[in-house]
Amino acid sequence: MEYLTIVIALLTFLIAFYQFKNARYQIRIDLFEKRRKVYLDVGGIIARCVTKVNTKEDPFGFQLASEIGRLKRESTFLFKVKLKTEIDLIFENALRLSEIDRRLNPSSGDSEPIGETRNQLAEEKRHLMSFLDKALQNLEELFFDQMSINK
Image (tube, rainbow, N blue to C red; front, side, top):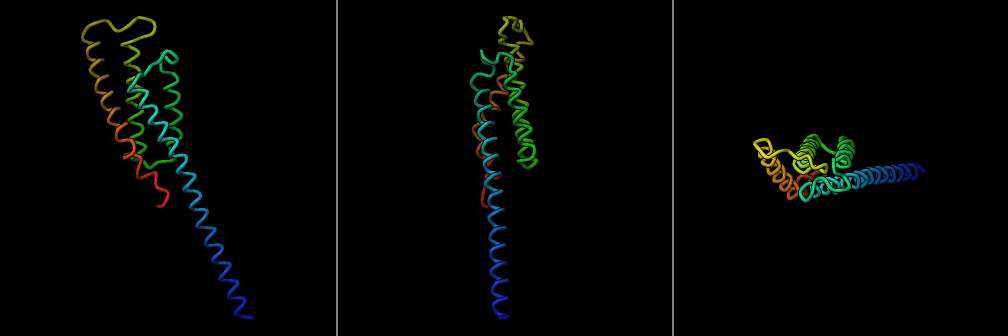
């Protein structure tokens, strides 16, 4: 009878242990899905900025700014500080690019007049486009450490 109690206790422990492991794995899967969505959305924002920042549907960049704000809030608790800082830098550059694009190519027709200021804005736009292009190329590498399920 004593052996039966010990066997039942061991079986109960094993069941509890495997339930614990399964719960931890499920949390990793849930986090992976949320992180993957942010990864894809960040890539989408960068791709939009590299191709055409302000569109006819969003000439002032309000939708872009709204989407960036949503993603910043989502990424706050999903990623470690280093990656969160990199994401924020990408977003800051995307918003600045949108602002510059709006000043250089406004939908109202009141563009920045030809001169030194316009040349500086064009140069800054070129640097921002280069930064975002590199960020898009390195996006997978940037997110890689945070996207593992088996850690």
